[in-house]
Image (cartoon, rainbow, N blue to C red; front, side):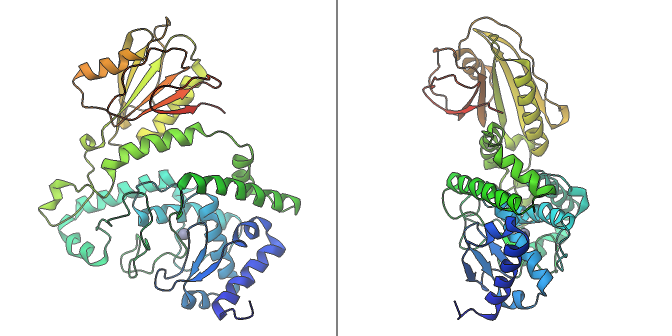
Length: 412
Ligand SMILES: [Zn+2]
């Protein structure tokens, strides 16, 4: 290791600082190999496995700035930004994650970096919500000046879809030199996150272990406080995150129409390639609620809160609720204009899983993008497998396996 380049030595000194002063960051940063990648990044990047750096950029930073940049790169994977992007636009996802991280780093007293993104209006928000807000803003800006933006966007790549990025798999390098995310003409924001290169679930499992270890190391050294303590707490409590599973399930299905892979036809004539954003394009989420009496109101309210969040994040999506015990007891509809979602439990008899599926088919609605069946699974009357994906959200310890679909237990 005595052959370290000057840039590598600069990064190593920042790692040493963390070993001595902030174990949380050290625990996550130390195992990552350093890889020179000036052709892929203007600053620094991580996919949660390695740290990629641009020698020239690293050499331009003073000690405190390097420490900030390394902490920034640690927080991207610590918060799962490398596994949570889904089908979102990689650039905008980076911007969203940067706001979340940099607000925290500011709070922890780190020295700001030139050109970093740190807007206080996003304080306390999850990156998915920041992304949704940024997306909406960008859409509105485009609508206001579609003509002027056309040639510019072709030039800097901001309006172009990137094949291979829409499927959740990492491209050879999500960053393209010369791009200025969110800041036309400006420098790219420092510190990128790229998708985890392997299986997302595996990456997420590794992340949880590492964050827990990092928090423990920091706690022993008496260095765990503030936002790091909160981050660690959410991991050490080790909740089976039915919320995450539900969000991921629904978002993936909705996103197939929300992503950059589907152009908005209205703008193609003007030479613009914009994502499809019509409400009608986003599709419906079906929620089938088993009202046989074993579902408690508290669980129902928790589910309603999650679905409210989902609709607010995807303003074009619709939620259609069908209540059923042995027969359909009612139906209602929600969208982002009619939130919060409120769920009730009419009925109370036995259980039959077939009627909601039949009801939907007969309703004349197109197939939903996906269906969530909220039930204790105490029933064996299943329909044939529908043409759309189904998630069974169940109360714990049901011990039954439906003949199709994904099962998620609602455990807190
Ligand atoms: Zn970043």
